[in-house]
Image (tube, rainbow, N blue to C red; front, side, top):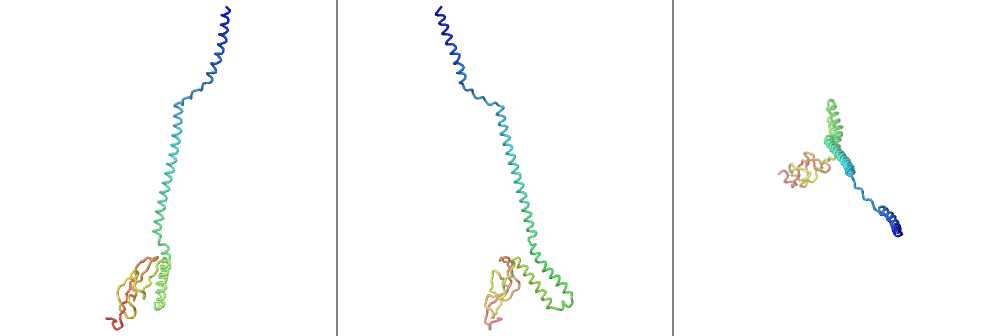
Length: 206
């Protein structure tokens, strides 16, 4: 009887210790990561897709605006080019108008008998108009080529004939038949001239 009682006490002493250790082992375990559900993955993908769609829409909008600006620029450039061609001579024409006014006055005055009989006044009027035309051309870069008495220059002069003369050395411009001009240094047309050929006085005319 005494041994049974002793055995029961030992059993009671061991059991509580075992029951206290069990909770400690459960407490020390780490919980496993919860798996991501399919719904969450779909939401994330949907968000990314919406972001990319918005970026694509913004890029497309920028592209359309750039194309529209380029198209407008091309249209403006075409209009400017057309206007430049159409009105490129506007300044020249404005400078020619005063000369036309002088011609109108000369025609009007020529109807007056006193002026018509006055050749000197008529000549002065022509000289005035001529100087106005030359001045207008010079303002636009047109320069008359010097010719008479100058050395013949095949780049600026066109020889129509050769004149034998003892009074000039050879290869000089004797007479000018049609004036030549340059535009900002570029030849517009050569001066048509006659060119001298020096001969002794006794051979003149042979």
